Image 1 (spheres, helix red, strand yellow):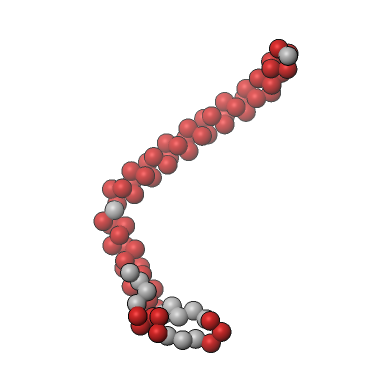
Image 2: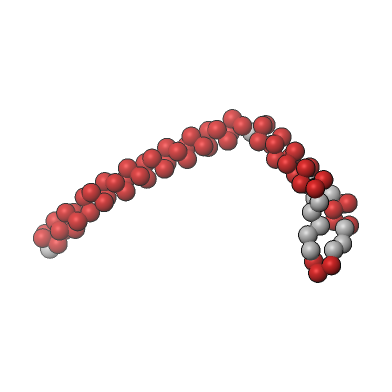
Length: 78
């Protein structure tokens, strides 16, 4: 979407960037448009990620709090 024939045709010494301000503006416009169109999906994924992070934190807290005693119980059983 953002790489145009005009941008591809530009040449800079030593392989420098061909990205201009107009390219950046066009890129930002496309990103904003896609973000707006997919905002529902983005919100749903953000909520899912937050739930997963809370679950991971809860599991880690349980593991850390039970960690040394759980290992001692296993060794005592052997």
